Amino acid sequence: MAPRERSCRHCGERFAPTRFDQAHCQACSLRLRDAHLIESALFSQPNQSVDRISIATGISIERIRELATEGSLSAIPVGADMPTECICPPGVYGRCAHCRSRLALRFAEASYQASKAATGAKNGMRMRDPGRTRRRS
Image (cartoon, rainbow, N blue to C red; front, side, top):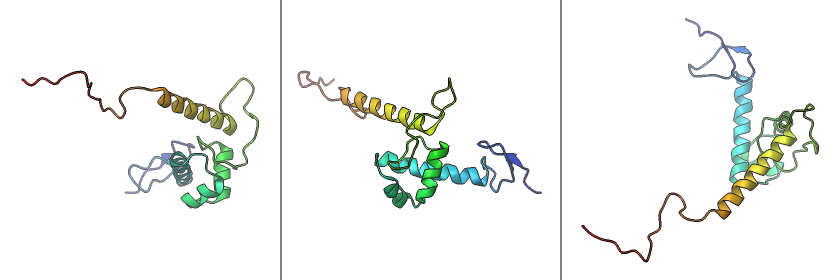
């Protein structure tokens, strides 16, 4: 029995899956894999140049620039030749790669400020109050 064709969840094209759990066509699977590799490299070491990200992930510089231009990346490496202005349609915000990178930078800055301002327990651990004595039952 031949496998039935499915629609790709990302682009909508029909494809014959090679695995039972495959939800994306081959082209979208490669695009998503590359985007995940780039974003994880940028998450572990932010503000890296395109050259360093290319070396760390094994993805070509042209491919990184292509993914950044089409808007597949939530964070964009330094030097990816991104547009310096918004190219979104009038009345719509956050569609172009420039707006997405600016929004991601805002979130990163807000997260940093929140973690810097947070006081108290870290990582779910509580500190014992030195003024309070322990009672045994």
